[in-house]
Length: 365
Image (cartoon, rainbow, N blue to C red; front, side, top):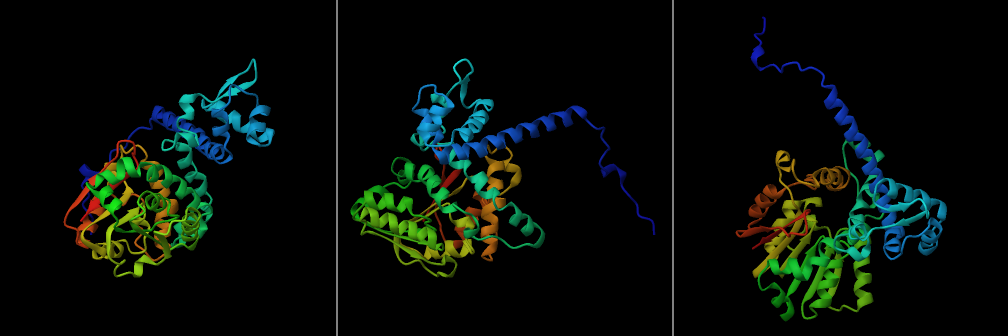
């Protein structure tokens, strides 16, 4: 039996556009250069080169290497990347290098919370699992946190910029009266606390409140405990706990989750448990990645390619390794709102902070 084909809906053949091809090739070449810059930016941050150069007048390679305590030959190659990327200014007559203050404002530890070099570390960190990810593309499955060397260290530093630095001036004020309640003393739990930098900061500021950090990873929990011991914080405790098995976290006036829900084995189960854990008048403060659940709505999201890359290389496989749904980094505000409603929250607002293009803050009751 012959099939009738409606040719009116068939895609029309288009001529090969050589100009478009050339523009695309140029774009890819530019991407190679920019990716190289990001890799070297991570090295500049980890070695302290940006911090050293920000405090120096124009200097030679030998002077910069000596001040940083590094090997001159490697510093020379690193500087060549920075000069050709127009990050560092080079004076050929004096053979000196200078990091402009306008660039240092986004590359040094003193620039926190605007230090983009911190985030640059995520690219080489996640790239280390490329072979394992390709295998997962072919066979399925996921990866575990221990497959990512330095992950908790980098996340703690990133949290120091996005969350800790903004806690008192920007994040807590999103919930009217919350700072005052913390001053008077309330019970707080942080679900998926990681290394606990936010909790340490809160426990120091609000000694009358009681704080508990929960996380699945022993390495992260031990980092938090060590920080609490060093600061003598008797009002802060950490427990290693699989949140996918919890019917309730306890009874709390405030539950927080900073960039943690989408990685979970059972995100909906965690949100259900959070809803059951709030005392009357309690509030859930959830920070997660800003974006839409619909790809087409993220086309103009400035860091969308970066966020989807982190999703593919880290957040999705970490969830899948636990038997989770693999929501991914860009699970989106629409899905988050639906899941919060399903958990029983009846009042949910979403807030953005002007200085933070990466995150959204959900206040749920």
